[in-house]
Every structure is written in C-alpha cells, then in structure tokens.
Image (cartoon, rainbow, N blue to C red):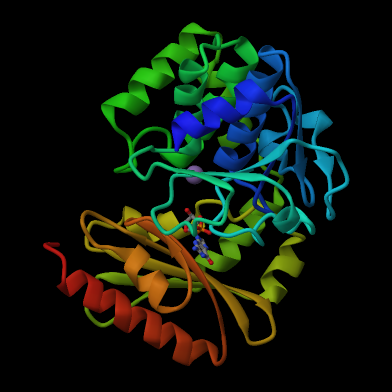
Length: 319
Ligand code: 5GP
Ligand code: MN
C-alpha cells in the first residue's frame, strides 16, 4: 500500500522502474513520471523497458534515456513494476529475485510484488504517481507533469472513458498548472502516426461485421495485413473502439493473429457491460469496459466463443 511505498523511498537510494512490454502511454508516462519524482528527491533512478518505446511517447522528457533491457543488470534497492498483471509481463529476467514494488490500477493484478499498491479506483497509474508525489512531499516538476499527463490522457481516452473521475480532472488541472501542455501531448499521441497506420486501418476495417443481435462487432487483423501495411507496434492503437462509434453496438472484439493459430483479442464495451469478466474466462483480464486476452486454436471457433460470452455479459447488464 501507499504508506509502505513512501517508507521504502525514504529509506533507500537506488531504484529502477519498469513496465510491460509494448508499453502504452500509462506505462511509459507513469514510469518516467516516477523516475523524475525519485530524482527530484535526490535518489538514483532509471527506467528500463524490454524493447522499443513507441514513437508516440518518444518526446516525453527522459524517454531517450530509457534502457532496453532483457535481463536485470543493475544494483537496485528496489524495482518498481508499473501496470503489470504479473512478474513476467515486463519480459525482464531476474525480476523475481529482487525486491519489487507492484504499482497498478487493474483489479485483476496478481499481488506478485514484495510491496503491492493496487488502486482500482485510479483512472491510470499516472494518477497514483501524482498521489505518491504528494505523499512523499514532492513538488510536481514540469517533467513529472508532462509524463503523468500523458498517462492520464491515454488511459482515459482524452478524459471521456468511464474511468474519468473528478479526481482525474483535478490532477490534470494541477499538471497543467505545473507545465504540461495538453495540445503538445495530444498532438504527440493522436497526430503523429506513420502512414502505415492508415494502411492497416483500411484493411482491418474491411473485416468489420456484427453478430446476429446487431449489438456486438467483430474485427480481425491477419499477419498478412500487418506485413502489407508495413505496420509497426502501436499502429493499431484504438482500432477496437471504432465500431463502438455506432449507437447500436454495445461491445466489440478485435482479434489479431500473432502467429499461426495464435491470437490476441481486445474487448471493449459500453455502460455496465463487464468485459473484464469475459476476458478472465479466456485467461486474460483488464477493466470493466476494456480488457484483453490471448488464445490459441481455430479462429472462427474462438471468435464464436468470445462473441457468445460477450452476449452473456450484455444479457447480465442493464444495457
Ligand atoms: P488492450 O485491449 O488495450 O490490449 O488491453 C485492454 C486492457 O486489458 C488493458 O488494461 C490491459 O492491461 C488488459 N489486458 C490486455 N491483455 C491482457 C491479458 O492477457 N491479461 C490481463 N490480465 N490483462 C490484459
Ligand atoms: Mn493503465
């Protein structure tokens, strides 16, 4: 919990921060925000991530210093693990042998850390980093503000997803006061993609269909589409939300072929339809309105099973 995190920071000096592979804006923004916070307190801190940082987040202060690491190779008093459901999500070997601090806002997170601070009421881990800053008596510097604002903006769909609360907007307001520029960060995220995103979108949208109820949308992405579009990671950010723009669509599933017979699926829903429960049935997890999972087998059959589970979830809701 928070008080343990505060005590740990006060009593130690050398920290690393990591997040999941293929990190999103909350993963990168919260990690860098925490890094700047620790440094502002006079501590040694660095962000280590397995793989590349997506271009949308490359302009954040400190992003250029992020080290690509597949095996832990520093001497740290503790490693913060941001936004991860389990200890394997960062894809960094050796994490299980060191003192870790699990900071997450997913209710489904395993308590894998030596310290676990999980707040499922936070819109983003970024909101928690802001709270941590206040709890350790830190000052919101411009660097912290820019990084944490990125986390909030990406995890709340620019402040319109149901996780957006009065607290989220209060924090965002403080971050803007401290120097975060909404238009600059918005442009970095939403108007900064390579053309390959448009190519990929064209192909993926050509597969969109509805189930017989007309309330569930299905969309697919094959390995071939990725190749044809010369897509890079992150090009398909937000695709799953496109069909939800239709009034009658209550839930959407977007399946990506990641290897022959192996798929990742993103689930999204409106209102009180709980897709985290649906994802859990298939070994995944997430939030009520946004969840994901990985499955293997026959594509048509898997899609049918997921759509059936989504139909159940709609039935169990008031939608
Ligand atoms: P996305 O569809 O954007 O990949 O994921 C939506 C949400 O579900 C994110 O908050 C993400 O952390 C969570 N999620 C996605 N895939 C998995 C998974 O395989 N396991 C768990 N526990 N959560 C996932
Ligand atoms: Mn998040």
